[in-house]
Amino acid sequence: MTSPRLPLLRSGEPSPRHPEEAVAGEALSPGRRAFLRTAAAGAAMAALSSCGTGVEEFFQKHFKELKPDELARVLARIERRNRERFGRDTKVGAEGPRAGVFFGYGLDISRCVGCRRCVYACVRENNQSRRHPQIHWIQVLEMEKEHGVDLSHADLYYEADAVPRPGKFYFPVQCQQCRNPPCVRTCPTGATWKEPDGIVVIDYNWCIGCRCCMSACPYGARHFNWANPTLAAEELNPDEHYLGNRPRPKGVVEKCTFCIQRTRRGRYPACVEVCPVGARKFGNLLDPESEIRRVMETKRVFVFKEELATQPQFYYFYAT
Amino acid sequence: MGPRIGWFLLLAAGAGSFIAVGPAVAAGGAAATASETLVEAEAPPFSEGIFPCSSCHGDLPKNGERRELAFHDEQQSIFSHDAEHRWCLDCHDLENRDVLHLTSGAKVKFSESYLLCGQCHGDKLRDWRLGIHGKRVGRWDGAKTYFLCVNCHNPHAPRFKGVAEVVVDGKPTVAPTQEFLKPEPRPRRPEEQRQ
Image (tube, rainbow over all chains, first blue to last red; front, side):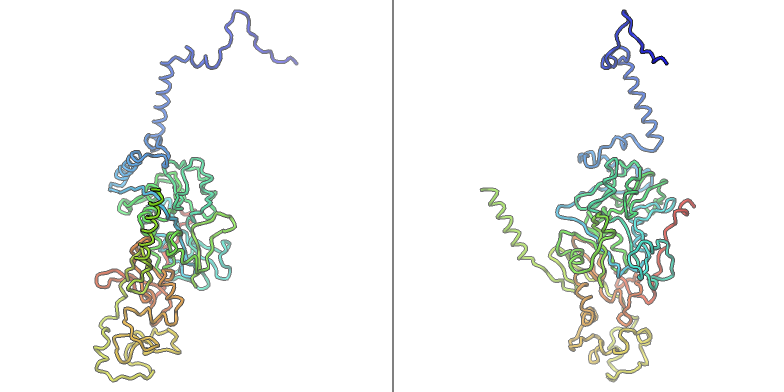
């Protein structure tokens, strides 16, 4: 049982160097360091090009830190990429939030008939992947009147010749644009955040595809591009927003943005316009004369999973 | 002093514009705010060749007695609007066939039929004027088109079933149908995503 012997310095041998001396010393000459730097950069570029991401994208600053000229270059680059990918011209905007606007969305459960028109209008408007994977930002749940809003009696995959079916009601779920969004808090890269007008957005260039946000979202409102999105060029909506419906790459998360490319320009979201029963209401919560405020002031309104304190900006109501 | 005067002028200007504009009421049925313009959607078309009603009724004797009609089977066969208590002349006018009338006797154009609906369904009329009931398309911050009661409800069988897109005078609008809507295809289940 002898203890391991420590190496002893004998007289005449050089004493160990201080770490700073080791770095600055002749062991790592400037020429060698430059070589290593170049080699590392080359390897990184090779890795980037093999996974389909350009160097510019990789080194792109956070969206909120982009200067106007940098943002213009980013948008131009995305339009160029769109042209390469789809052979079509697109217009990618990045309109910011308006002062004095805080969006609110109302859905009249006593009107919705479960026809799923909103689901597919959303897919067309927002350039979602059609198949492999099929991504729907709106999920219409069929529930039983007998049980009320109860997820243990909900069917996403109902099929019928005619709706509404007797004894059933319909409960569409999409991103609730929470004021206290768990998805934002969990994102490790700051790729998703809540805008001042209340829209929770994702920067697909900063999303690393870890899907933490998906596990944090209690509404199942976030969807992952497991494969390259399938989107035919003729079905591409060329009217796009950087934080919204621009075509996504493989490996990023996406979600409802209240049709940011429409609503930031003053239009209603696509789901509101397509709804054949007028169950969907949208407007500015800060405008006392907006439709959504009138709904909130005169109808029975509730939020989904209120007990989780996510404080949605998406309200369900009964107009009857 | 300068900024204070500036604020005062700003406030005065704001108050002035509020008084000048005020809450406006659109020419049509729905209530408009100062910042928005409301456009009425085209009403669904009449059955072909049926309007103006006076083209036939002008020559017929006026009979106000409730009875089974020999004509207008299209409406009679589907009529389910408190059918036990009501019939044609509760809404259609005996004297002037080309208009409708309220219970007060006041004449109402076909294009303002929402006034008739509102006699019984006042809560719905109120909600519709505010944009809660019914559908609007266009801009949340400005000009929008609102649909009329008759765009979604057939007045002879008003329970909502479905709507179909139609073109009236070259303008797209919607008309109620007697068939329920068929839902779009269900989403793919997770296990079907790879197929």
